[in-house]
Image (cartoon, rainbow, N blue to C red; front, side):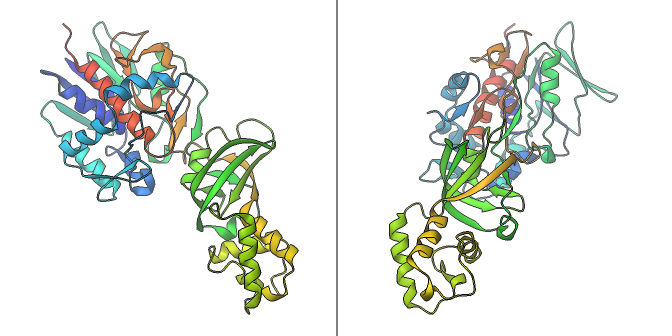
Length: 403
């Protein structure tokens, strides 16, 4: 029994290792890049948020997010951490439930998986672009240039997000060629572009804040966490958490930022009033409270002239400055593209697959897992947990010898 797997990302590697556990099973793992786990290596800002201890209690999206329940129940975060420990990886969990390698390096995750793939019954083919996939009389044929791989069962485990790191449309195209349907694809866990002219001057500034996305004045989503300003707009975990489907469709999109979510606005006004006893220039009004560059931009946004002294500011000017720090509204224009996205929202219809095996209901012997399916998770390790769970289930099912 030969199991072929297209895509050596998180779900593909998990599928390969699971399929190889079946007695007598042979596995061929095909990857278009020059090395395995390239996208995985870049996750979590290079730290690799590989799971979340709350990863089975909601946090997933799609036309039918419940499709993920069976796989997550069979291989929950606790099982994933035990599995990684068996591969030699030590992990640490934050209070939020986010799990990282103890080394704090994504390389550690990729390395233990790469070494685990070095088994006699696993063949890894790098630089192998699946140009054509055909159903044979028995099994499948995957063609790349002059080379053809034959397998009894096939797992498609490749998504489009992060095209700079190897994401492509090939997985969706392969499954569509076998009659499967796909929802509209759009970027998720992605930076958001802004038309606010102060964004460029704040490039690289980080701040903890509460972010609320407003669509035509109505609350769309919200989260609290770290924000990072970029050349084009807003990034960081707090933005990734609220970015799903933002700026999709018309209307006005705003991001309202509270840079002091643990301090009431009146308390901040009182603090700023105390500063009138100092010799601080207006540009230093928020010194010791916020990042210096951010503080200067907020005073300018409040309409306060930078040439004066804090001691000369009126109560109204201090109120305006405090309001800018507590409710800064930033216009949003569009999300960054798939090349910057960590995850794809949308995908192949899950109704066309058996959630207990990950096998196609249309084509016997064809399986899918991970990002290519219409399941995506919240920021914080949910998507990688789905990759491990769905990949393990697909690999176990496809590699099982039922004859």
